[in-house]
Length: 257
Length: 179
Image (cartoon, rainbow over the protein chains, first blue to last red):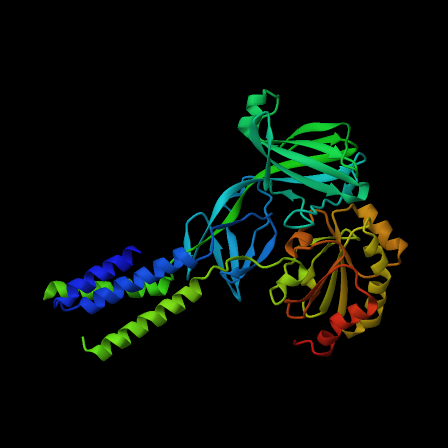
């Protein structure tokens, strides 16, 4: 919009004779068109929250977003790869231009669960309503109010024993306020049967890095900070460069007159 | 500026504006997921233990046509599909086909007894952390992925396949491995 206004202004000035007016007008107008179209027609800001190891086929910017695996619970420094054909671009917290998009990562709290029977026989974890059915990583896309405060919540299933588990994420600060013996983030888990009834005594807080037997399931919890990919629309970069170039040329010609 | 020049200038600007608006129209975001969404992309591979407690991975079978099947013992359609997978393996293994089972999240004992009860002879990986399930964005179990000899995902299927469907999935690649 600003570019269009500047263009109109210089066009008016130019009408009165300044050489270079065409370049100035053209440059400002190109910048204006690029900015205006990105703001008006560009995609909405999107944040892709995915578990370590997930791959997402993207429409635009075209490619596959590969979220790396990690054994490191403090994985915020990790970079998401955008695989485009045979090349790959690493995306981190710094913004990167990709034609008409800007991409970057933001840290996000998640929790990985590992579930077994009371005899420690490992079991499959599924998330029928999650972004990946076979992921044992909880992304906490929802929140729920508990005692007047919003907490991230998620659910997972253990189909081999027909159990559903609801999990509430408590940050290190939340845990400190609860004055429990543990430090660091923790999950409050509730184990339910097929009908959605919480099993007797199956409600427990499990600190990160530890495990507990709840409702007949041994649940190990590991919280992690992991990058989410943010995609925003931006003015088309070649047009922006072209516009700024034309504007600069016009300005030089005009000033040298 | 002469009148003709102004008209050309205006037309060029209008064309630029149209192209830019077309390019800027928001399409960002993920395509629908599922095992078929990675067709044409390099097939992710992770080294895991097999039922003999030896390290094994999908990319070890590069150069073969691989029909990879994600399964779990509690999954009823997975059990129903297994005899057909074994039949396909026996029929086409001499033609460069590898059937690779990937157990999702279960113990070695459970996977081993399941495979033994059904007389499974093809290699099976134990994917305790469900890495393959995540990477191939499985929508459920069973999930089947066909990987070409060049290591690219050729096809992806959600749900149980019949024997003719399995044959049809691998036949073009067995006939023309360079596809």
